[in-house]
Amino acid sequence: MESSTKRPTFPVALGTFICIAGIISFGLLGLGLDAHVPIAVAAIVAALVGKFIVGVTWEEMEIAVCNAISSSIGALLILIAIGMLVGSWVQAGVVPGLIYYGFDVLSPGIFLFATLIICSIIAVATGSSWGVGGTVGVALIGIAAGLGIPAPLTAGVIISGAYFGDKMSPLSDTTNLAPAVSGSNLFDHIRAMMWTTIPSYLIVVVITIVLGFSYGGANAAFDTSRIEAFQKIIAAEFPINPLYVAIPPIVVLGLTAMKCPALPGMIAGTAAASVIAMIQGKSLHDALVAIHYGYESSVAAKLSETAMETLPAVMNELGIHGIAAETAHEISSMVVELVNRGGIDSMMWSLSLIMIALVLGGVMESCHYLTVLLNPLLYKVRTVGGFVSLVVTSCFVSNVFLGDQYLAIVVPGRMFKSAVARTDLSPRMLSRTLEDCGTLTAVLVPWTGCGAFQSGALGVPTLEYAPYCFLNYINPFVAIILSYLGIGNYWGKDRADKVEKRTALVFPEEG
Image (cartoon, rainbow, N blue to C red):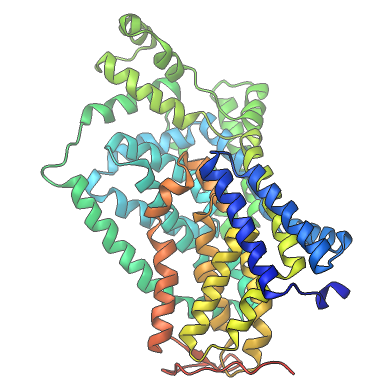
C-alpha cells in the first residue's frame, strides 16, 4: 500500500525513460542483439532507480512483476496452444492444403484485398489475431510467395485484417479488457469503436485494392510456372484432400460459435489434426513430435539440398514432373521455410521475450514512471482531441516501455479512469481509445508478445512488416483527427450516452 504514495520526480522519471530507450535502442540497433538482454538490462536499471532513488522496495516491485505476468498467463498459454496447433495442422496438410487450393482461387490483382477480408472475417469469428496469424496467415504468406507478392507487404495486410477482427469481436480478450478497466460496457464500447475503426478500415480497403493493381495489371509479371511448382511440390510432400483441409478449422470455428473459450478450442483443433495425420499413416509418435517440435519437411528438404545436376533424377523418383530443375530447387527452398514451423518448442523464444518484457513492465508500473510523466499534461488538456492524443501517446509508450499489450491497456486505463469520471465525457471514449492504440500498436513493437508472435509465425521481422500494417497506425491518427473535429465524441455516464459535436474539455485536478 505504501508504494502507491511513492513517486519519482519528473526529472527522474524522464531520465529513466531516456536511459531505458537508449539501452534498448543500442542493444537492438547498435549491437544487433535480440531484444531479450537489452530489455533485461533496462529492467535492472529501472529497478535500481526505483529502489535507491524513488524508494520502492524490492518486495513491492516483485509483487508488481508477478501481477504483470499473472495478468498475461492466459495469453502465454494461448501462445503455447497455437504452437501445438500449427505443428499439427502443417503435418496433417491443413496449412499446405490451404496454400494449394488458394493458388486456384486467388490471383495477384485481388490477393491483397482478399487477404484483408479473409483475415478480418476469421478474426471477428474467433476473436484472436494470433490464431489468424499462426494458421491462415501462414498459408497466405505461402500463396503470396507463389504470386510474387512481397512477404512484408502480405504480412502487414494479414495483421491489418486480423487486428480489425480482433478489436471488433466480442470474443476478444482485449475487447473485453478495455471497457472493464475504463468503466464502460462491452457492446457500448464496440459501437463506439465503429466511429474510428470503420473509416480506418475503409481506407485500408482502398489501399489494398490500389496496391493490387500493381501486381495484377496487364504489365505485371505473373509466372504461372512458379504456381505449378508450388502445387506439385506441396502435393508430393502432403496428401492434399479437401476433407483433411476442412475438418480441423471447422472444429475450431464450430467450438467458437458455441462460445467455447479459445484455449480448449485450439486444443480440440490440434487433436483433430493429429487424428487426421495418423489416418494418413503417421504414427502416434510422429503426431506428438510435430506438436512438440513442429513439422520437419522431407520431400521439399530433399529437393532443396540436392545438387542441381542430380535434381532431375530425384524429381523423377519422387514423381514430380513438368517443372524445370532450377524452378523446383528455388520453390522447394520456399516450401521448406513455409512448412518447417510450429510446435511448442518454436514458441519458447517468444515466451521468454514476453516474460522479460513483463518484468520491465511490472517494474515500470510499480515505480509510477509513466504516471509522473503524463499526469501533468492531463491537466493542461482543453479539448477532447487533446485527451485522445494523450491516451494514444500513453498507450504507445506503454507498449514500447512496458512491453505488453495488456499493460498498454490496463496502465493507461487506470491512470485516466478517475480523471474521466470528474468530467462529463463518456467512459467509452477512454475504452475506445485504449483499443485504437493499445491493442493495435503492440504488434508494431518487436519485443511485445504480439510483435514477437506474429514475426515468428509469419516469418517476417517486425520492423519489416510494420510499414504495411496500414490499419494499425492509421486508426490511432483517425481517432485523434475525428475527436478534434467533434465527430463521434460521446458524452454522458450511462447507456444513454449521446454523440455530440463538442470538443471543449477540462480535467479538474484532484483535491
